Amino acid sequence: MSWIPNIHFEISERKILLRIFDLVFIFLMIALVYNGFDFEYLKFKPNSWKWVFILIVYYTLFAAIFEMYDLQKAASFQTTLKNVLLTVSMTVLFFVLTPFFTPVLPENRLQILFFFGSLVLGLLLWRYTYINLISAPRFNKRILVVGNSFDINLIAENLHVADPNYRVIGFVNTDNIKPDSFDRRLMAIEVADLLNAIKRYSVSEIVVASPSKGVGVDLYNKLIILLEQGFPIREYTQVYEEITHRVPVQHVERDFYKYFPFSRSNKNRFYLFVSSFFNVIFAALVLLLTLALLPLILLGNLIANRGPLFYTQVRVGQNGRAFKMIKFRTMVVDAESGGVQWAQKKDTRITPFGKLLRNTRIDEIPQCINILKGEMSLIGPRPERPVFVKELSEKIPFYEIRHVVKPGLTGWAQVRGRYAESVDDTLEKLQYDLFYIKHRNMFLDLNILLKTISTVIYYRGQ
Image 1 (tube, one colour):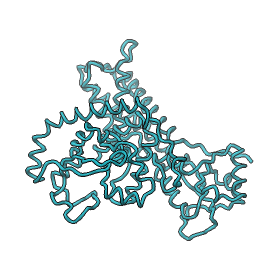
Image 2: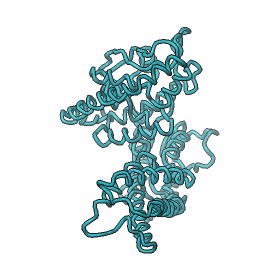
Image 3: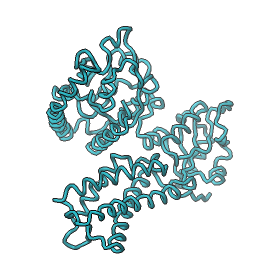
Image 4: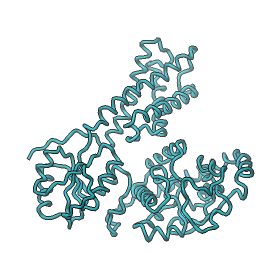
């Protein structure tokens, strides 16, 4: 059997393309402006290339902050236009304000506008091309799922939400149940017709979501034939984790130790030392800078947040040890007079000044004291209250694994997940937390710090 898979760019390949061609079009437009408009500000001279490196650093930093490499946002031109303007504005601003590293400002300040315009135009030309070519449906990865009937719709939805270019077109049902609730857009493929269906529908990959005991002999033999011919066949949890950056706990059996090869960084002394050192430096600097804001915070608390400035609450930390987490108070004094309850996105218990503190994340700053005390880290799963830990541990598998590492001021779940208002939302955040515990390293930590800035700017997360 011969098959030719459709051309498809994986997530990592698309991000690499975006990064490379962003820079290519930036410098191409600068070169065109330089040659066409007597542009003397940025000169390509053999002995003055330092500014090129500085421009790349500034652009790469702000492109990450303003989510230029978020593939879902990159697929929308309207969102891309906004992000390009924000990224270029900050890049140009920092570039012209650091003349020690960059060229001296030109006498004709109009050239700065040419500089700004060339970056915007170059990026928009490339991103428009990307949206209409690489991000177009013709480059979708066409997937066939092998799984149980009750999982098919959820699997298809999860994969497509995570990556719009990852399209589930059909399924091979391993439990032979044909419920009416199947998504009508998904084709039901019989085992006997599997090989022909792959060729007929230009399937790119098979994702197996059924346990091994659910794959019958006939289907198993068909999969072996495909595997021998080099056809890509992957397991669902592997695919899910790769494209969502979450661990699908609902599809992992109780013998988690087979599935979680926890990151070596959890025991790596060098990583832990560097992380602890950075935590102390960060917490100390933030607390010092907060002293300058303290008079304004005290005034705001007096006017629109009457009551104690600080609020302490018992949370569960590393290895299940309880500690008192410190925050600036954002709710009314008797917020839980009716009993313990979940915080909500539009919680009526939040005071006017408390809302400002939450939106700017200033309310989290006192937790730097917990970091200095060694109870928390800068990055890690957010600590939860004992009553909720007990409740969630009974409802959600692997929930207590979050306590393998220190809780954090920010974390992967905070920059990727939505606001947690229910058990379902907490399950999603747990998936992100487990991904972090499984893969944590310096580069992931840096990525989280940059995304935290984006989260604060766009008022997202919790």
